[in-house]
Length: 331
Image (cartoon, rainbow, N blue to C red):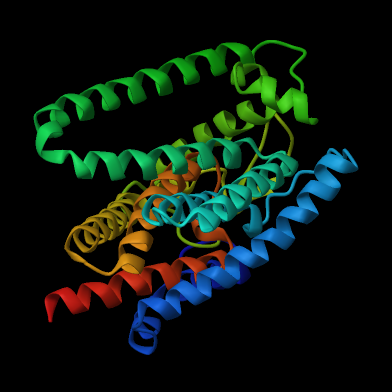
């Protein structure tokens, strides 16, 4: 480890150990019903957390943001609830309960004042429903796949380019404000380059780019930090982007490894989803596909995929479910 801070080097390394727990968990828990029980408990716990966010974020109308691992689970939970809703056809009471939970979680997420969570929840819903209908009609839609991928790639590049250009121009202007309350944070979604917190991400991204270029192959190592110069002077060990984190601390090698692992997770989940006849397995594989699509987007603006040990433990359980079911297919 070539990083600066030995304590944080160890701390960051431990976060990845949590993810490796997926392998022993996959041997200890093999029945889909047990995984379902675990996540039903987590869904119930999320109700309590949502109540807290609603109480303090909406009813008491505080301007305190909640960016803990609890709020970061909303995209995955929304994907799971939507997946359950899709497959539980004919079970009216359960579907009503699922809709009620989605609304309650949405209210809780609104109380967090975290814009990336809001957007990621919408993406989780769209990705889950979208993949379900795409897979059901994939033979008919197959001929459009390459076109859709190309359009999505071009649109993404254009969006990022225009965002960076606008942000750089705005950074030279005076009078930038932080969106702190509910209405301001909603309004800032339509004009992100006028919000200082968005521009702080642009500033730190520039410094991380410089650090990456200084050691592009293996990065600076765990424990390294970066400091704001324009929008403050605070020191960061986790930037507001998991992708910049990979490039900064692990270089191209770590970034490629992370992309490969995420790609393998998606491919495995899709394979299991299509091959399994177990309803519970299909529900969770669809939720993993939709939920992790949202988390990939979330990773553009937050480090939650690698920052919180409790969140990594939840991810490890999901990974374990995929590993366990993949072993059954390969047996």
